[in-house]
Image (cartoon, rainbow, N blue to C red; front, side, top):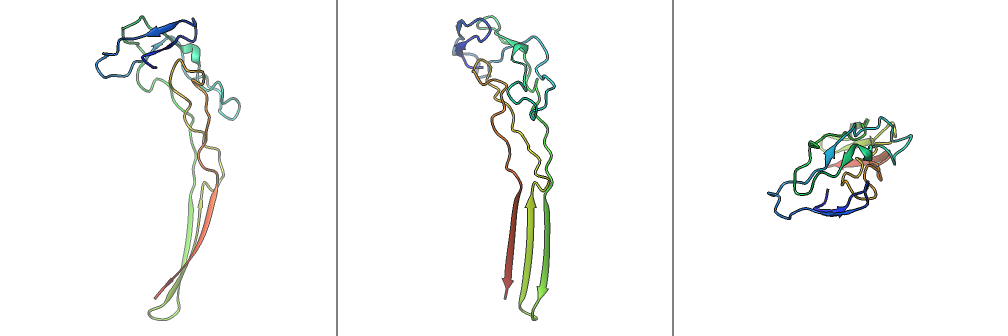
Length: 139
């Protein structure tokens, strides 16, 4: 969370001292942060925003690092190559490579800055299936 902002539950502005020892200011955790919803079903409520609240000003929050987990990912890459010798010094190599062969949507982590309007929302995903072919002539 930012050193200054607006508490999303109460709508009141807050400000912490700028001298917090160089650490990150975190809110209090008061519930389960993961909703258990699949990002395919609802990417706007992947995290439970009500699981966090503003702690008393200038005190550390109790939310631990990695207290919530992002969506899982599945990725399968494939590569095939064939080297054909033309002469003793000449060869041709044919390559076929495919990334994310199954074309599974791998959602990125949700926005994690508590107190902003997009907290807990997943706004992007990794690249879809990509295929490339190449021919290499060696001499």
